[in-house]
Image (tube, rainbow, N blue to C red; front, side, top):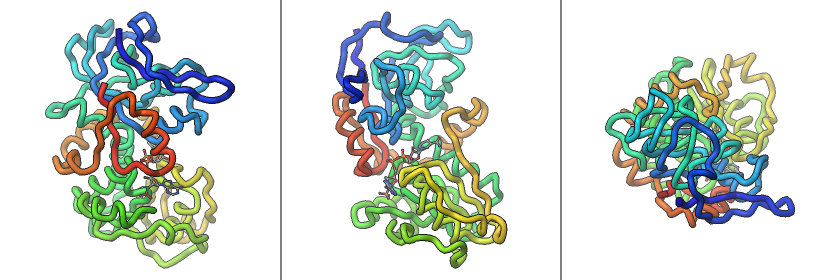
Amino acid sequence: MFKALVLNQEEKKTIATIEQLDDSHLPEGDVLIDVDYSSLNYKDGLAITGKGKIIRNFPMVPGIDLAGTVVSSEDARYQAGDKVVLTGWGVGENHWGGMAQRARLKADWLVPLPTGFDSKKAMMVGTAGFTAMLCVQALLDAGIKPEAGEILVTGASGGVGSVAVTLLAQLGYKVTAVTGRVEQNGPLLEKLGASRIIDRSEFEEPARPLEKQVWAGAVDTVGSKVLAKVLAQMDYNSAVAACGLAGGFDLPTTVMPFILRNVRLQGVDSVMCPTDKRIAAWEKLVELLPESFYEQACTEVELDAAPKYAEDITNGQVTGRVVIKL
Ligand code: NDP
């Protein structure tokens, strides 16, 4: 028997309960895994609270991330005892996910845990950190060099934002963090490597089509009017990596930054990211994240606490990463 957080729907409301299950309850797949850790992302928050239409088929075990140990495998790439990490691919949305002590998954979705890494650290990174790495990689691919100027990170104290700040600082960029919680999270953001912190309210004013050029690059996790403001302030020939919608999925902008300042807006998706890009991103994360990141920006909780933290993350009250011990 193993413990799982199971979501059901009653009268259009999502109900989350801890249940005792056995392997026969698990969905089909070719690799059986003992889950060591899962993590809590914004999307998990939306799924568990039912605030977002993430899950269409119930019952469902949430958890878009997991790290664990292979129990048995019908795929030659994995053997019992191998350490693996999984993010995305719709796991925790339409295939039972990481918030259970056991999972059965497709081998194609797995990435071997990089050497020198452990399950807990992998989940401190999780989808949020992995997405942050993909955003940073997008800026590197766009040719944005540290000497080009300041890089802006929005939603900076969230899971994606806090890792993006850390990675960019480690790569020698000058990072400016935008947060709605300057007093509460300013000191942490500085420790992670932000050299300047700006209150989010400055980015919530309606943007003019073009404003003073300030940023050489940006990682945006917020979308909506904040991203519109960021675009209006981008330098000539700069790039923005946009991955999130914490502030809304609209984008009230104009074509001016694109056609007069050669600004590039690069979308970033982590869910369907191909495996070779995943392996490269995980290796780079292990190389770049300092030990201090794992000490400063993470909270560990038990599975029973997941629903409470799910509520908190959807209310913008979580700082950094939350990992769930199974
Ligand atoms: P978190 O909730 O951890 O962080 C989001 C941060 O955005 C918050 O910490 C807060 O930062 C800020 N924020 C919250 N509410 C608002 C608001 N109403 N307006 C403006 N800013 C707000 O989420 P994650 O970091 O896990 O994810 C960030 C976004 O990226 C989400 O929209 C998520 O869905 C998306 N995402 C996309 C992925 C992809 O593959 N494209 C993968 C992973 C995440 P602060 O207090 O510092 O302002």
